[in-house]
Image 1 (cartoon, rainbow, N blue to C red):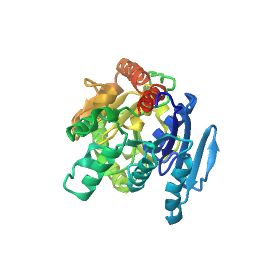
Image 2: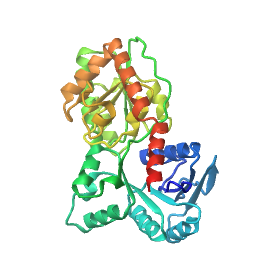
Image 3: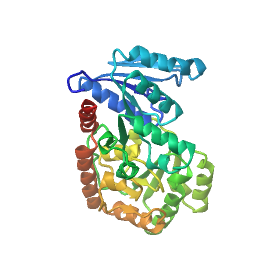
Amino acid sequence: MKDKKLSVLMFDAAFPPPIIGGKEKQAYLLSQELIRNGIDVMALSYVHNSNKTELIGKLSIERVKKDLLGFAYLPLFLLKMKAKHNILHIHTPSRIGVSLLIVGKLLGYKTVFKFPNENMLDNKNSISGKIWKLIVKKSDMLITLERSTYSKLLKENFIEKKIFNVSNGVEISKIKKNTKKKNIELIFLGRLVPQKKCDDLLKACEKLDENFKNWHLSIVGEGYLYDDLVSLSVELGIDKKVDFVGYQSNTMEWLKKSDIFVISSEREGMSNSMLEAMSIGLPIVTTKVSSTEEMLGKDYEFAVDIGDVDSLASKIFKLSSDINKRRDISKFIYDRCVEKFSIKSVAKKYIERYKEL
């Protein structure tokens, strides 16, 4: 495709605006940066939150109703757009995403499929596992976010040159100033579900309080464990220092007024929240989830084993009580984000791989 102008049709079931989750945010950020690089991009999505077909700047978004008629219209729209677009980039790893990939392939699009994680192939003998294998074999390019997923696909004997391992991207902001202050603001940002292990964070804060009194924790997010976690904070005697603020659309503003970002998860992809924290140089304490090493480096000092509450409390204490250490970590995180995770650099990598299709 080196001699042909790139033209990308993206599909995501809930393409922004509004931004619903990390997957949608990444699709939107990439589309905007591709357009800034002169690439023709159009988005296809379902109607959501009353949003309909619209033009946002240079990005046209075609939205269809999430019903039988809408489903039937999607392949017809792909046929209609084939004369204008040569790449079909699917961000939704669901049945509808798979269906559109098959239709796009039949219509002659170069197909790009964002692969969610290696677990999709674990059930090798199930019908689902066989379908996933078929899909990834038929795709012209598979996008993986973590090296572990990339390695798993290679072990499954998929062609290496069709697998594109690339990080999520983030818009870089000014680095946060780390000033000496009496009270340290901690922040947790995520869904209140078991995999996030917010209960471990609360237990770590109880231990932190034994040695360091001047802290406050904001828990930004919602989920079915909300009531249980509120009750746990009361049981641990730290409820006066913990605010459950629910869902917030302006997450960056919450990050900017915080001093330390904490991830306590047992499982995490390439976290958009961590990327946003990195984009302003916010010091991070995290568990060693799958993408931590890629994002923060193999020897990152403030990564702890999953479920190690004592170490989590110790690392938070070390950063909370040492302004110089916070400044050093802040600069390291910010510089690493600029170098590796800027959406500008990520989009350029996509363009080069698109050209190879």
